[in-house]
Image 1 (cartoon, one colour):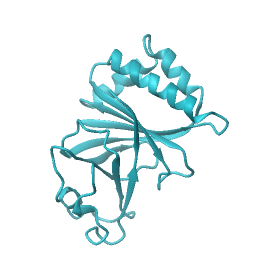
Image 2 (tube, rainbow, N blue to C red):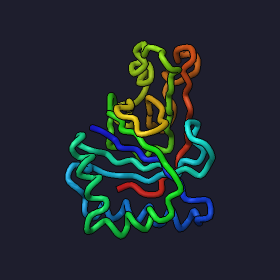
Image 3 (cartoon, rainbow, N blue to C red):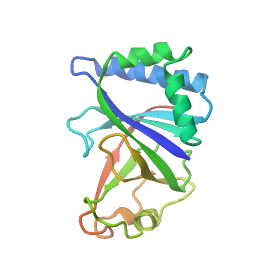
Image 4 (tube, one colour):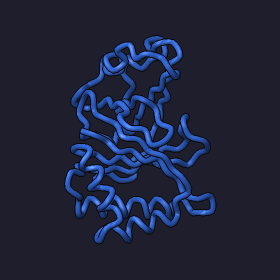
Length: 191
C-alpha cells in the first residue's frame, strides 16, 4: 500500500476556516465517487512542520493500492465529478509539497491518528535497521510505519502513525544525528 501525502496551506490573505471547508469538500467528493485504486483519504490540521517554513499547514493523506492508482487519482482530481471541488480549494492554495510513502509495517487503514512521528536522518547516514527500531513496541493493529518512496519536495524519511509514541522513537534509541519530530494533528475529515 502507498500513501500520497500533500502538505499545503492557504495564501496569507485567505480565511483558514473557508480553506478548510473547501479542502474538506474535495475529500468528500473523492469519498462519494472514489477513483479506482484510492482506498481512502484524510485531511488533518498539522500546524507547524519542522521540515517546512512557517505555520498553518494541513496534511492530506491519500491511501492508494499502487503507483498506477496515483496516476488515476491525479487525472480524476480535475475531471468531471471532482473538478469544482478541486478548483475551489486550488484558488486559495498558498503553497505546498508532497511525497509518496510505502507502508512497511502495521495497519495502513488507520491514517487519522492524532500522533504523527516524523523521522529524518542526516545526509549520507546509513539506515541501520531503523524500520525495526521505529516499530519496536508498536501495536501493529492500531499503528503504521511508513517509509518515503518518492520525494516531491522536503519530506522526512519515515512516518509513524499511532495513538502514542512507541519506545523505538525515543531520542536515546535513534542513531546519532537522526531526529524525531512528534506532531499532534487534528482530524478534519476521513473517508
